[in-house]
Image 1 (tube, rainbow, N blue to C red):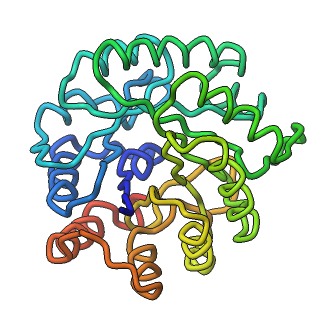
Image 2: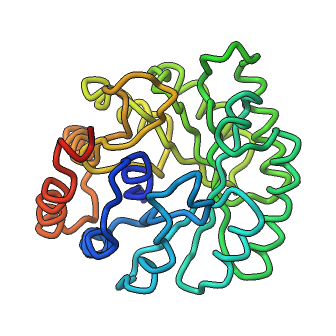
Length: 285
C-alpha cells in the first residue's frame, strides 16, 4: 500500500516569521484528519538552529493523534532522548548525507560523527519501541564537488541496512534527480534488502512533479514525502522554484496513474484551505 508522508515541519522550518503555536496545532490537527500514513510534525533540535520549531513539545501536547503516525527529526543525542520520552511519537528521523560537506552544513557533524549518533539512535529506538527513519540526503548528486556515484549510495545504504534501520528515505535535496536516475537507483537499492522500507523525500520544480511521481511508482517506491503547496525544500538549492513535492500535485499525478489514495478528500480540501490562510505569500517570502 502506498504511504503518503505529509511534512509540515519541513514546510515551516525555513520561514523566518514565527508561526504562532495555536496555528501550527490547528493546521497539524487538520492534517491528522486527512488520513496520511505519517505526519512529519516537528523537530527536537537547537532553537538557535531552527527557531521555528522551538515550540515542538508544546505543539505535540495539543495534537489529536488519531490513527496517523507522528515523526520528529533529531540532530543530536539530546533530541533523541527527548523524542524517546514521548510515547505519542512513532518515528524518529535523522538526515544522513553521503556528502561530507552537506552533512557538516546540515547537522554540524561529519559523516563519521553521524555514524556514531546513528548507532545511538538505533539503540534508543530499540529500547523505547520507536522506528528509525534515515534520510539519505544528496542521494542523487550534490553541488559541492564531493565524490558521488550509485556505488557510494549503495555503500551507505548497506551500512544502514546492517545497522537495522527500518526506513531509508532517499532525498535529492536540491531537486537534481531525473526519472531514469530515480528508477535506476531505487531498483538497485531495493535489491539489497527486502526488509527495509525505501521511501522518497524529493524536491522538484512544479512542472517536473508528475514525471518524478511516475518514476517512483514505476520503481516500486511505496513511501512518498509531500508538503502542501510544495512549501519548504533545501535552502542550498538556491532556486525558489525547487521545493518539496506539492501534496496536491502528487495526488493529481497518482490519480492520472490510476492510483487511488486512502485519504479523506473532504478533510483534504479543508487542510488545503487552511494552508492558504496560514501560509500567505508575504509570510513565505
